Length: 440
Ligand SMILES: Nc1ncnc2c1ncn2[C@@H]1O[C@H](COP(=O)(O)OP(=O)(O)O)[C@@H](O)[C@H]1O
Ligand SMILES: [Mg+2]
Image 1: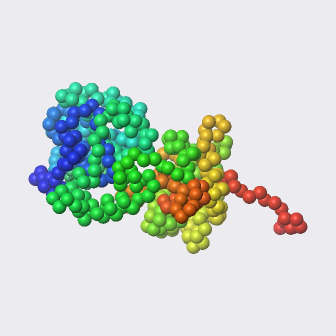
Image 2 (image 1 turned 120 degrees about the vertical axis):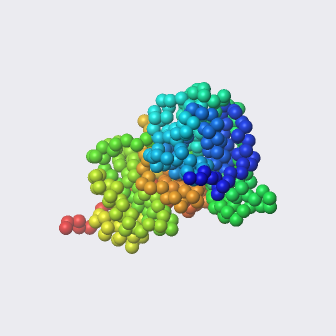
């Protein structure tokens, strides 16, 4: 078998070039999406493994699943020469590590199963998309870097920027982690160095997809700025650290609610919620997907929930045809959502905030998503409800003020979440009209 990387040459520029000679203990490449951060680091990792026999490295991301879908794809399809010995054995998803003929090894892991990766020692670690991790996790990794086979030990990471108050930004500003900036012009796939101009793909992706993003996502992924979510609808209430919870087994007796927002070009969103005895709500399953028929979603939902109690209520967006299809396929009755916006938003905000007992009353369980929509992911759109909060902003165009109306963009999970809160908290008081006879 021929070993060749000729069909996918790596041409390093800028920070992607600098990292090869940089031996800082903590080094991070920061930049917008698609500048070549991950590719450059993966190239360095592979080179290190080949250069230092019996060295041990770690590829780490917040979840093992996201590592498999991103870094490992680039690594196997672009970085490692075709036919290389390390590609033999388990398929990407089930693989524990890459074992090199020279005795080097690269272990693969996610912080969703930390004990697996934290129980051993490494010469180097690559943390992909570092903003997703906690600082505790980052520091735990640094404490594992003492294998001593290489002349230096290194934590190397990449990330898109996040909000200005992120711990990682503070760590960089304090000089504890060395940051190198990465730009779209460093990536030869998007920028032609000779012509000093965008390539066709660069024009499409950077000037098309990224430049057209909105809110903080645009600042972070197109411009590469640590930028906050200013003017977001839930800025005083949503806190991912408090409103997102690790998964747990939901007791059977907790009532369930399904909320549906129909869509085809826009994502179809289905959320399954459970209510604890204190009235707190937990979104524990979700479909967030484009280009799938309502009837197929309905069948998938039945499959996903076949061992669960039936919902006490199914609350739907108003589309009559979709509702009829959904009812027919599931054999379950639906009700129309209460769609008023302002009071619905206030109901959600009130639940997201900590109540008197110090806990919010609305939670999103990790790992709820059925299947990540790859098209949405490629377009850097939200791929689940949690990801909408940061970009859900007030419409402040043409004289409108904060608090008037939210922008109707990437708001499908926001709508379903609002229908859930409205169902619980905005029930109209049922006043019996005088003189009506209710006997039937
Ligand atoms: N220096 C380079 N030479 C060749 N291809 C590159 C280079 N940098 C990036 N690429 C390609 O561009 C695409 C995006 O790069 P990636 O590393 O995923 O970007 P980022 O991690 O910054 O979002 C990948 O397909 C990658 O293989
Ligand atoms: Mg990357």
